[in-house]
Length: 188
Length: 406
Image (cartoon, rainbow over all chains, first blue to last red; front, side):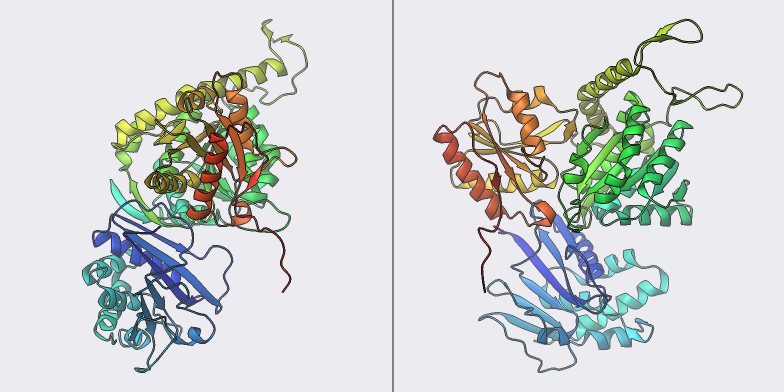
């Protein structure tokens, strides 16, 4: 049903900015040359701190599916503590990729056969670039750098341009720098 | 023209901004709220020179729009679900007073029970109120239809309701071509002077009690009463059957995009069965038709963009030669049938070789309408059509078969 389309599911906690990440990724994918993109939150109510999801789709033809993503090609996990509460790999397509924000270089999650796990210290990248609000590193832009490096589906230049369009002035610069650091710190 | 990756709500706000709306009055409700949040930010930053009036209810939101439009302003509001229901008294007033408002409805189910998710019961429940009702397939159509809505409304002196599916469009970002302000200004000049001008130097009674029978006015002219006003209103709405496609074509000339008219069609020419729907289901149905075509099943799609006035002649013409129409309603007239199925049956009644009309209800309260479920419903309808079934009981797509004990 979804040939030629890449489906991304985001896992975060309410307030971490998964919805914004999904939307900025869609912008970056469009800038990278994908003909059609969509980004959506999970439909319904959300609570700060509770597990939430969002989705991004990219395709080389008009996207006509509006259902929530249930069989992702790529899963992005903004907070590794979520993996004990949520089956982040649920529905992952064969050969799919799971990207986890973690400081633990050995971090593991149960994955289906043939799936790929990518780790990146995105929180560290956000902290190093000074993307910190109220003492908390904000990971939702930095993670886009890790996504670009891990998947090759979007260019880093497009990520930087999309971030620049979503933030202004020095905030944009810091967020792009965080994405650049996260791009460099991706580990299989 | 700039391509932006924006939600349906943001597209609606862009439409209002490009239409140079002068007064916005609204009360927040999910999933509409981001429309007014976006407009509010633009008004605050000075990017949109409009008066934004925060009111205490949807009833008041429409009341403010009625006042603003009566004074000659271009006014806008947006709502959903129970907000629309609460506004209903004033929805009828705005129409009967022949005010050229545009209102967005981010379609959401009606309570009880509470549910913030999509269906089309809210706007379908006010389809008799005398507004033009347009349903959008995607976010591009949301922006385009808001701007076109003012041109239609100001030409016919009737209000226009722009409906788009909550969450499926309201909260889903996708590429939207945002036209240049100059192109929109050329398409949509400032609002013409109102029919009745509020002027203290020339006092007049607006919205008076009207008697049952015609009476002579102050100049001795015999004037129609309530019934004549209502007949004129009906005739103005019927004029929208010409105005909607003409305005769509003018918009296409102004922006260079294909125009949108009363209906949209997809692979209907040799179709044996047509999926008929309004809103984002039209987009989803075209995907399903293409998948079924790969299986060799002749399926097409008829999208109803304009639900009021109902484009009876257009649907008769487009469905000629089709064995059956499977209508996918996201609303129900409880105790009878889905609203689009009812309208379609009436439109086809008496037409030689009219297709059978099968009614199906889906997506209520946000129930996911998957391509697989739609394909299965289309296959079953095609089998019934080939077997010659003229009538079928209402089908429920995606309904749980039975409750299961643990």
